[in-house]
Length: 92
Image (cartoon, rainbow, N blue to C red; front, side, top):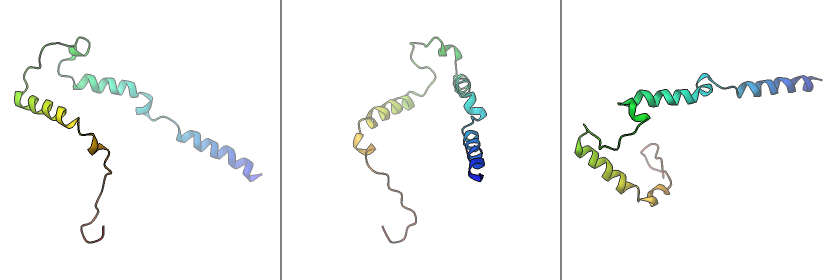
C-alpha cells in the first residue's frame, strides 16, 4: 500500500522539476530585448543599410576580417581532443 502512495508523490516531484522558470517562459522576449538594446542604430534592425561601416578603426576591421578568414580553414585543430592538465608535478 505504501508503494501505491509513493508513486503519485514521485510523479508530482517529476512534474515540478519540469516547470519553466520565469526566463524560460519569456525567453523569446528576452532575446528580442537583448538584441534591441545592443544595437547602436535601431533603424537597422528593420531596414539594414548597404553602406560601409563608419566610425570604426580601419586597422581593427581589417584585422578582424583577416583573422576570420584565416582561422576558418583550420578544420584539423577543431577535431583534436581537449587536454586539461591539473597540477604541475610529475605524472602524465
